[in-house]
Image 1 (cartoon, rainbow, N blue to C red):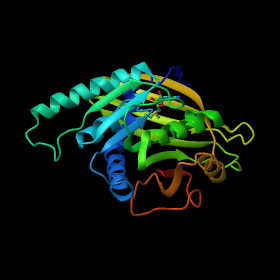
Image 2: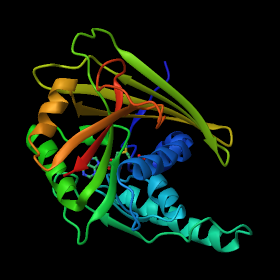
Image 3: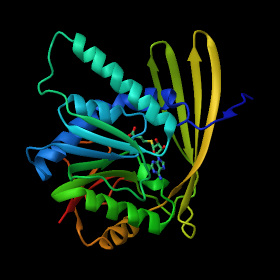
Length: 274
Ligand SMILES: C[S@@+](CC[C@H](N)C(=O)[O-])C[C@H]1O[C@@H](n2cnc3c(N)ncnc32)[C@H](O)[C@@H]1O
């Protein structure tokens, strides 16, 4: 049987980035649509907690938003800074100018559960379940309070995450395949049934990376906090200056809102600062 070497996939963010970058344009189109629909305004200041490899930071800046991103991982921040430098170089060589001039970018080391920045943001976003890395109610609550404080009144937080079905008794799997510059990555993510009492779900990602004929295998295991629709609503209700105004899913179709937890488990909640 093939052996997988244990590693932290955020310590080597290239493979993670190759896999998830496929969605970047679609996600940024959606973020722009949410901004125009729910929080329009002239200033376009964006905050991305847990910004990781910076794929969304750099694309939103290219679209003219002023972006502040932060993450706890030094390696992902380093990767994001290099990506930004590369984007700047490419931009200065580009024959066709972007529609708007690019926005400013600030990248910081920081924790989702305790952060504070000067000034206020129009839009904050945290997609692909990163918020579920916060394993306690106190940390999740503190995160929402920090985010609410960072938003201007009327500003929105676009929060994408998976709900958990406590009745599920099986193992679920997702698979992605992507390639960039000769690096081919197959990513299998497996999750075990959510534990209602612990509010935890165990996950494991396995990567098979092929590069110039050489194949390496890596695996990362972690836990996420679990939320039913009711548990998520009850968390948001503890933050008086945030209101849950709309929900979408990971299809990122701005014209197809849904009701939290009614059909799908992949949900994008739009929370507005009162
Ligand atoms: C799934 S990645 C998402 C990155 C990025 N938002 C994206 O969409 O590509 C999750 C990120 O969360 C970061 N992270 C996990 N726990 C964190 C915490 N408590 N505070 C800040 N960042 C955290 C990890 O270092 C990682 O970069």
